[in-house]
Image (cartoon, rainbow, N blue to C red; front, top):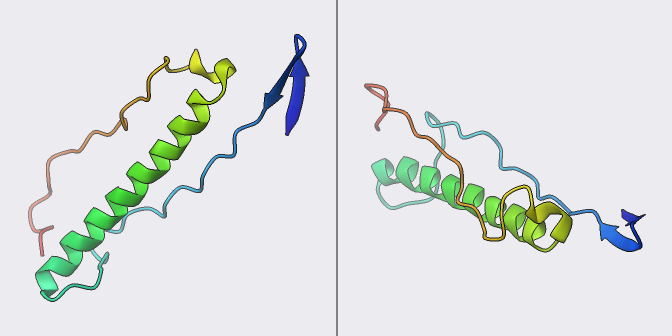
Length: 90
């Protein structure tokens, strides 16, 4: 979508799709070791989330009218990881 404002053309960002929610108990990725399957699945999910965040920041920084919402540098992924629950490891 394109909008004219104050004599400028503003182009709406194309936001990426978010990854599906992480299912820690069932996530898996191909790996030689069964215990590594879950760890690799979780790691790939995080990789996808980080890649999505990078696209969001690229879209934000490419538009001067959005820079004011987070500054002129790419922001880090705002994530807080709580303490692991007992028994969640494979």
